[in-house]
Image (cartoon, rainbow, N blue to C red; front, side, top):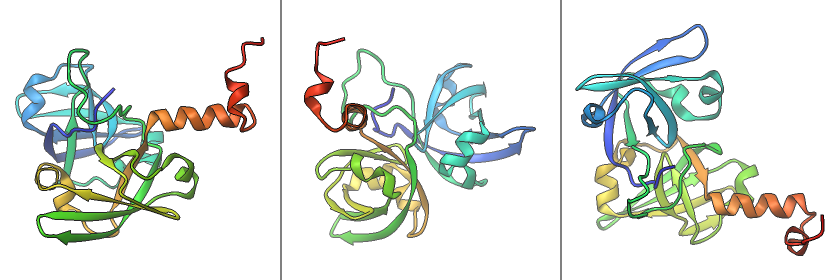
Length: 207
């Protein structure tokens, strides 16, 4: 479990094709604080550390993860957002992020307003029921608040700190981004779906 507050930036140092999937090496200052088996969110995707040293770490990416995230597009030199898991004693400054990507969107627009930035993300139509105005959404692992919502696109405003300390400043319109919708909204939508859209049936005490 993560918070969507990016802890550090990393750089893809190498990628290597495996018989099934891919191994990536990421150069990052936080690598010395990791251990084999640790989870790390890379652009919002939960990966497992399989090797590390003082300058970086390596993780294997499964074929399924490559198919449903933007990690397929990672090339040497790419900047990625990194976050280690939430500790039970930590403050929850963002929102609960699982590291399980719901879909890949596209940056439809990036526009500066004084020291702030408006970012518009086009998202897959099947995520529409999980995206709400003023709700939380993770974009490449960054916890953001939906400021504007249209059919199949939403807009977020980025504060200067987030712009500097995440990979958004290196992004361009058309780039693919990982989207993870708020877990609470997903559970509510699933409960309504399972009980025919009637929330009263979801709370029934009958067997």
